[in-house]
Amino acid sequence: MNLYDILKSAHSGWRYLVLILLIVAVIQALAGWFGKKAYTEGNRKLNVFTLISAHIQFLLGIGLYVLSPLTKGPTGEALYRYWKMEHIAIMIVAIVLVTIGNARSKKMADAAAKHKTIAIFFGIALILIIASIAMMVKNDPSRTFFGIS
Ligand code: HEM
Image 1 (cartoon, protein in one colour):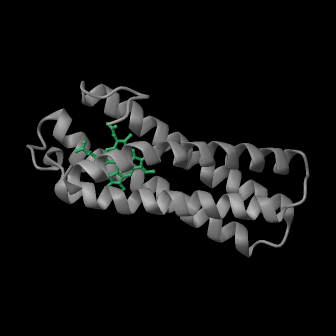
Image 2 (cartoon, rainbow, N blue to C red):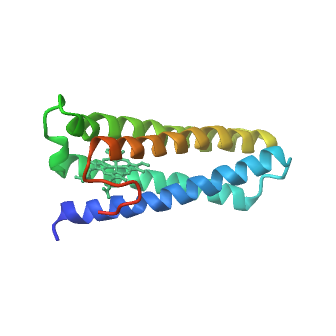
Image 3 (cartoon, rainbow, N blue to C red):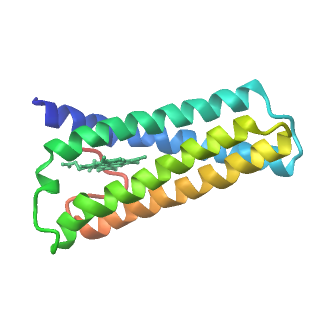
């Protein structure tokens, strides 16, 4: 196994951790916001772990971007356009939203405002990531939604 294969497997599997943490964080934030619950230490930790998992996925992605043959083909082809531009652009926007959401919620004093900020920012990030994985399945016939490389 070379570095490319290791990064590919790591990035492929790590997505499930990012997705599960994001889903749980969004559900907890919605429950906290609409249920008028306190913002607990558990909420704070969950949100920070979600942030860290997304940043680790970003670092693995940067390594892959450099090493993958899929980022070296002609942009005119949907397959290469997806891997060269669309995947990285959408995923970076999602990771930035997670980063801003976590930072903003930290600054807020009110529990409802903290939960609402997480629900909105993490929620949009989650939708973007799912949309990008759906685009991957469409543009790259070798991938499936729940596949693992
Ligand atoms: C939360 C963020 C991200 C998620 C959920 C994600 C998810 C994925 C998934 C599901 C795959 C396909 C793996 C497979 O077929 O098993 C993939 C591949 C890839 N990702 Fe990401 N990704 C993210 C961020 C990024 C970023 C920020 C970059 C670039 C800086 C990146 C670069 C790549 C590349 C180049 C590949 C293709 C690897 C190859 O097969 O050669 N990803 N990513």
